[in-house]
Image (cartoon, rainbow, N blue to C red; front, top):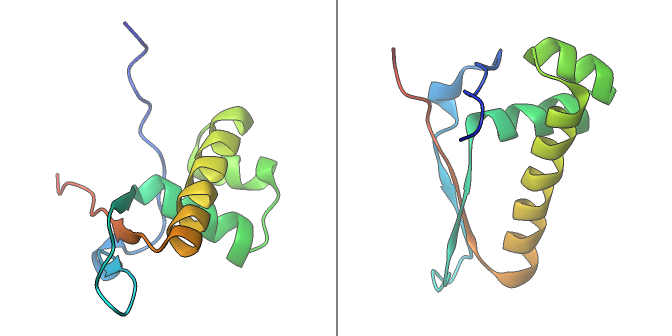
Length: 95
C-alpha cells in the first residue's frame, strides 16, 4: 500500500476552469482527464515561467513529484491535440 497523498497547495480559482475541450466535429473517441494539480503545474511552468524548484515549492511538493505531474499533464494535452481526443478539467471536491 502506498503512502497517503500529500495535499497540494493550489492558488488558482478552480471554480472557473471546470470545463471540457474537444474536436469541433464532436467525434472524440476518448476523454483525457486533467486533475487540478496537473493544471496548476502547467500554469506555473508554462505560463508563469517558474523553474521546477520554484513551482514545487509553491505547490508544497517535491521536485520529483512536480516533474511527474508536469510530464503527465503535458503528455495528456499533446495526446489530445494530436489524436483528436477530448480534454476534461476536473473540479476539486469542496470541503
